[in-house]
Image (cartoon, rainbow, N blue to C red):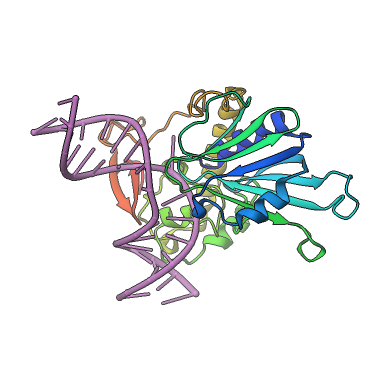
Length: 281
DNA sequence: AATGAAACCTGACAGC
DNA sequence: TGCTGTCAGGTTTCAT
């Protein structure tokens, strides 16, 4: 479920609820592929660390950590906890007596008494840690540009000349980090570009329009997500999420909201893609 | 180098 | 009710 706006919303919610708290202990499930770092390393970096801040980088949730100034040797050492939700990952903040959901893969106990739990039925999500050292100053960074802050020139430069369909390019996290299947389709609709169009065939003007559409769609979704979010974690996650009106995504066969032409669904690079055959060329 | 297809997983839902 | 098939908002890996 999570693309940039959802991850942004979740990260903001976590920031509100766990920033300043201290991690006391960590439990991890026995599903090794969930953990991108060695489980022992995850435990080592997380335990006794204070959560300075929770934020979003691409589709990742980043917890910035700092050692409590207690044991001298490790005091002040910084690290990060990185969470990728995959398709079905959820982050819960609950009291310890809440029943443990099926497919729970991590439980992080906090000094406040709360627990942060990572639940992920389909197991495409990943947990990792980064320990910051002098040679690794900045810590975790995304592979691609932040779609919300990249400017039009940079965007055009990034995409220019590629032979791949524009839909695939938008989903490529090494170009832009954070755009997923829904917002790719919605952006292309707003820009009037068919998803199968090769990037190389697009004019600068079209790319400029697409850049604006991507930012517009993401900004709207973030704004909507932020308004209804306060309790996302306690409930079953999906409740109360943004309800950005999808104009094409999932509307296969239904009339285009602009011209009434039935929306088409095709598969591009293995992902379902929706567009209006009349408004998009 | 760049592209597409397959693989990784479970659950929900439609149709019979 | 229960079975089968299809689909899912993501990423990595492997062949071409």
